[in-house]
Every structure is written in C-alpha cells, then in structure tokens.
Length: 351
Image 1 (cartoon, rainbow, N blue to C red):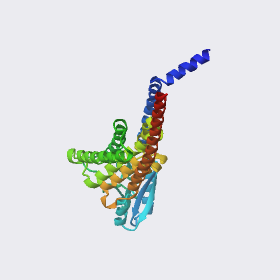
Image 2: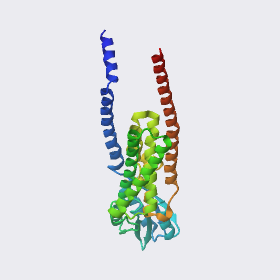
Image 3: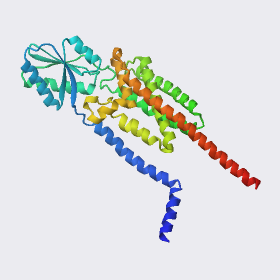
Image 4: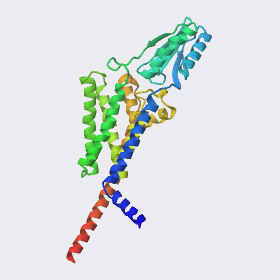
C-alpha cells in the first residue's frame, strides 16, 4: 500500500510543473559550475607549451643563441619551435601568415626578438617579459620589438573575442525567441528570418565597435560578413537541437558554443597557451572559426584563410539541413496526430 502511494505521488509530481522546474534548478546549478570551471581551466593560468618561432641569419655566436633559446625555454616552461628562414623578409611573411609568433635573430652577439602582439597579445606579453631577463643572465642583453602591435583602442587584444562572443550568444538567443514567439513559421521562412537578424545583428555589432566606440578599425564589409555568418550558424545550431531534442535544446547549444567553444576559441588566450585538447578542437567549432577569421581580417588582411569560413559554412549547412528535414517530419507527425484526434472526435459525435 505504501509503495503504491509513493508511486502515485511520483506520477503526480512528474506530471506537474514542479518536476521540470526542479530539473531546471539542478541543471542551472551544474551549468554554473561547468561555466566557471571551463573558463577558469582555459584562461585563469595560461601556460605556454609550444611557441612557433622563426630564426633568421647567421649568428655571430651559436653558443649565445643556444644559451638564449635554452634560457627562454626554462623561463617560459615551454619549447620554442624554431623554424629557420634564409631572410628576414621570409620570416616576416611567416608572421603575416600566422605560422609563427616571433622572429629571433642575432646581431653582434646580441639576440633580437621581434614579437607580434597582433598574432597573440598573451604570447607576445610572455615573450616580452622573459627575453630581457634571460639576456641579462647570459650576458647578452636582448632587444625586443613589437613588429605588429594591436590597435590603440584594444590594448589587450580582447575586442575581437568580445564581438565574436556577442555574435555567438545573440545568434542562438535570437533563435530561441523565434522558436517561442514564431513557432508557426515554416522551416524555410524560419531559416530566412534567422539570416535576416544575423545580417542586421552583424551590422550593428560592427557599427557600434568601429563607428560608435572606435575600439577597432574594422575592414567593415568582411567583418560584417564574418559576424553575420557566426550569428546565423549559432542560431541554426540551436534550431537543429530544437528539432532533435525539443525543449532542452538550449543545453547542448550552450555547452557547444559557450562552455566548450568560447574558451577554446583562442580569442581571450592565444592557442599556444591553451590546454592541448582545447587548442586542438577550438578551431573546428564555430566560436573558434569566428575568432580566427575576424582576427585575420583585422590584423592580417592580405593573408585570409578559407578554413574558418569553411568551418562556419559546414556547421550552418548541416544544422540548417537537419532542421529543415526534421522540422517537416515533426510538423507532419503533429498534423497526423491532430487529424486522428479530430476524426475520433467526429466519430464520437456521430455515435
């Protein structure tokens, strides 16, 4: 009798609004811990592992160069992945292509380290702090120059991360609002409205940051396109999950885009300083692709890569296709269910 009473009470509870409310309480608590943990793990104590570095010229003293490199690796707790170039011009081209983060050369027995803050402000800061101390220890004072500084309105190099984050979050928030307030839209029109708010939202972000605040001088058309693609992709990822798992779609969207995607994007902490796993997968996720494309557009305009655009396009196409096909099935299923219920009601009335 007691077991039957407990079972009845459980069924009553699961059928009431208190059950999903209770589930949400625990989900929010877990999500809060994961949110804090993911960002702290990725960003609180960035540690270099491998820093690609160009090496040029014929040094006057191999011993001095070897001592300087060894001292830098001890100071950083990381290895300098040295890539030799025959000329400084070729080494500089490698910086522009974002293959290396610094150029090491030696003149008159004194090491010279050219860093590129635009390639990664956090990496450049570590190198700039370590080089003079190491040079002093080996008796060869090091000269450090920043050959590609960040823009004055963005001294920490974080503005690109912020605008990419805004496009990701607002992208799927907009999709949730369409799902709630315009759920009767056919799949094609839902996709069209997602594209519409992505275009307008991307324009608004670029206009505020560039024209309004002057924080970044953007290549406006290209930056607008990247922001719009990011917002559209993020919105369609939520739409995809909404037809796959229904009302809990925000959970995998939040996990993919915010808990995993943003910390691993390389926007706040350059990829050589990220934990190895995050640095490897971040570029394959929409937030990482957005940061990568935007960063290159702003600081390395003549060397834009196709890869981040292909990543965004692939996510957008897959998500849109799944949404279109599954939404049609769900709509058809709901229609058959409604038709069956109507037929049953008519039969009952005729009887």
